[in-house]
Length: 166
Image 1 (cartoon, rainbow, N blue to C red):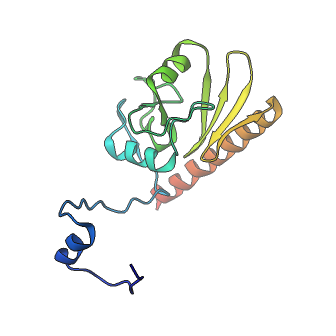
Image 2: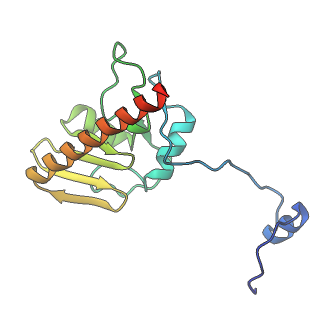
């Protein structure tokens, strides 16, 4: 089939092109926007953003690419803590098994950015997981990543404060 000039199509033309009438239209999601909510559960809008940002599960060396995962809070949710603890900044897709490993076996995770996670194993080994996979890093690199992420979070919070002040 040859390449045609791009132009708007009528619904009947789309049906002929696809061979069926079931078409689901979704709004465009700007992944640069950040979302925070005052609840424990990650709302569907946040889950969708997390799935679009991450290639799959973010546990070190995991290969699962699925939406059938738990969305975990890398920074533990505190029901008496500050508002806005749940959102893009605190969401990690994990299989149930790896979620339990994090919760019960001593794995620690820190979310560095929208799709970047720093893991420490129970044995003190460090792994950086991002959209390119798992990277073995040493303690010095882990400290540098954590420090850089903390500075960036502070700058982001300052920018939000400026926007709200108007």
